[in-house]
Image (spheres, rainbow, N blue to C red):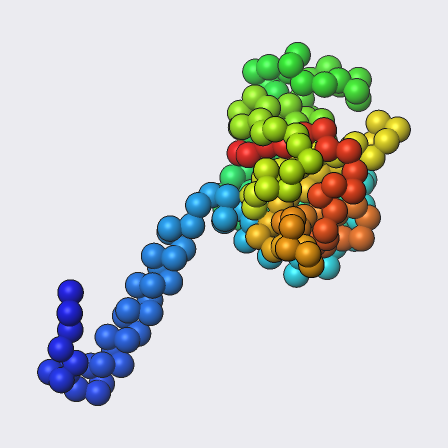
Length: 202
């Protein structure tokens, strides 16, 4: 559609420009893929001041969360998904209720615990393997794209997780990671710093 601007008053032109700008932003929002939305959500989390705190804390259900000023690595993934309308607490709990035997049992539980199950890396790995897409674990940085969830082994049975975001390393070869490994919800160039044991999209 071509508009002949000579037929419009200045006040009308301002309204048209505002309308077109609004249309652009609306289209940009809805044209974003789920992966792009996840990446942006994870980046937003880096604006929050969060102290690493692994305590067991009873939380609401559904959409429960520990206090916003604390968290662990899994809370980065959980909070990013929540920002795009996905409640991993509920998703994981519902799956564990139906298939408890398919989840790891390092913690001696007899039944699901909706306060903590979704906040454990091994449980998220199982859930994403069952309900999401398992992606290849490689040394090629091109295989890891914004919105991907990556899980690592830190040694001595310690696991970690974070999200790939749409920001590149200084050398331009890798996307960066938003995670919380003890210093809060931060963005770092650490994709290959630890042994990768899981790579997913959901």
